[in-house]
Structure formats: C-alpha cells, structure tokens
Image 1 (cartoon, rainbow, N blue to C red):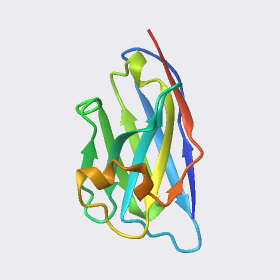
Image 2 (cartoon, one colour; image 1 turned 135 degrees about the vertical axis):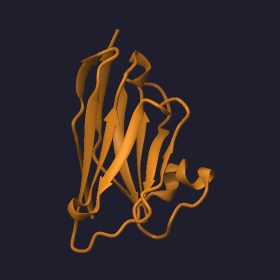
Image 3 (cartoon, rainbow, N blue to C red; image 1 turned 60 degrees about the horizontal axis):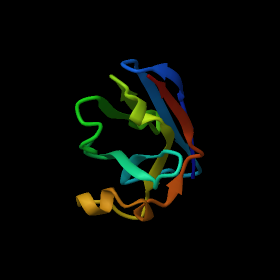
Length: 128
C-alpha cells in the first residue's frame, strides 16, 4: 500500500487549501484514514480521520468548523478541505491508513501508532 499526499503550499491567513491523499496497492482496504500534522519542533498531532465504510468523520478541536474531510471510495482518495487557515496551521501534513481494524475510540483514532501506512507528507505554510 502506498499513500500519496498532495496539495500543500503557501497561503495567506484566512485562505484555503485542499489536500489529497491517494492510496494505491494491489488490494487496498482501510478501515480508517486520517491526517496528522507536525510543526517544527513539535510532536505529530492528530487533525482528522474518516471511517472508510461509514464515512463518519472526526476532528481535532483546533480544526473543527474549518476543516472538512471527505472520501471517494472509487478513487481510494481522501480530501482535506482546509478553510480559514491560520498561521498555527503551518506544518507538514501526513495522511495515514489503518488497515488492520477500525479505530473506534477517540484515543485510538488520535494515536499515530494505530496507523499502518503513511504518506510522505505535504507542507502547508500559512503566512500572517
């Protein structure tokens, strides 16, 4: 399984970006897909996740109401629409897939160790 993240870039505060994460592989099947981010000097933190089959979405409080995660099952792709971006959103964004089992609790979804595959990361820079 390979995850290819794209869509990062430089944007002014208040602007928008859309990240994509395309999954490929002989037989791709994920229970949960998520996005994490890591700012310089900080630990990787949970941003959002989606249940692949139900489409249920989950968000960190810091992005709730501004970010929207969606999926296209036919394309094995998830999309992260980021609106009203703030300088504190600046980070490398990583998509990840949990393929062994569904992540059913907040603790599980927000734990990067629960995800089996990771994309290469895409840089989002928000200028003030």
